[in-house]
Amino acid sequence: MQRFKSNLRSHGLKAKDLKRALELTEMYRDDIIGKWNEYH
Image (cartoon, rainbow, N blue to C red; front, side, top):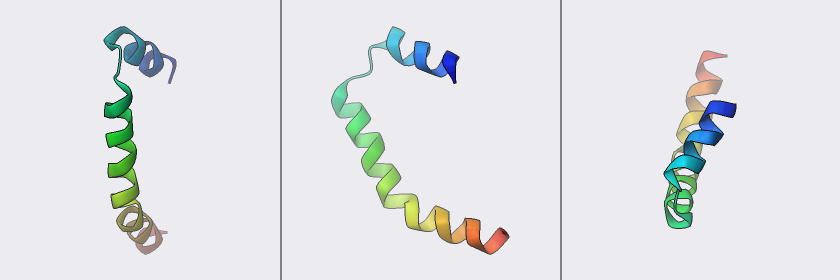
């Protein structure tokens, strides 16, 4: 996780990119939870 954080910092992730990633996560969350429940 630490490597991931320093990676983000060095690339200077834009706030809007982060927001986009969060939106995608929201969109796919139900699918992911549904799949998770199928397999567990």
